[in-house]
Length: 283
Image (cartoon, rainbow, N blue to C red; front, side):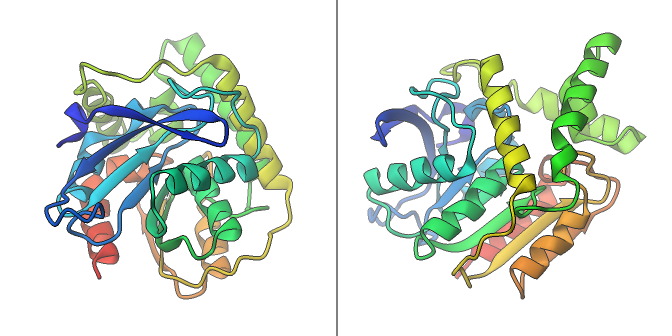
């Protein structure tokens, strides 16, 4: 089952119906996939299930079960959208429990990485390994400015008739422009069974959550498992200094900073990232 044809399902948890997609191998019938522990993906700000890059997800699902989990009030998920990562994490923990999962690996993109960190704090025994891409810790460098950077860039895109994702996720170098073009094309591969569009209110609530996160002092975490950190050296939304801040938060973490890469580091460098992630997740 590939990303393009994975069925959109729902799980009832925390008083809402959360959408998710499941793909990958499970040849032994134990529900975990051949990789042993399922990988749970948490996506970025302003995104629904269709915002995942097929060429990032499909390779990760080659030898394991992958679950792409939606957020309350986003896309086809019911309920009111959350404006606190504490609540998003609690929803995710409840959903994974409803799916019968007691141990998982986590892959958090940007905002999803912030939710993943909160999951580690609330349920330190749930996750075994964690991948954090283009994200930062509570109180991380420059995170309080992320709302302003995002809104100004979206306005600039409207004035110049540019795609906001191109300006937010990629550099303006020839390499970055090519990466943005091919990324947008890949997002159209799934032609049927697409998630519902993201409402404007979702964007506002999630930006509020990021602002709260940036102003908070770092909370303690009991998680001591392996962590992989991926960041772009030209990330305007989450400055690259956050990779160092995360390394301090999770001593012993493996860190990869990609050159000429912005906030969409995992999409632009998908082949290298999936190779690195597959090795990191392998027991």
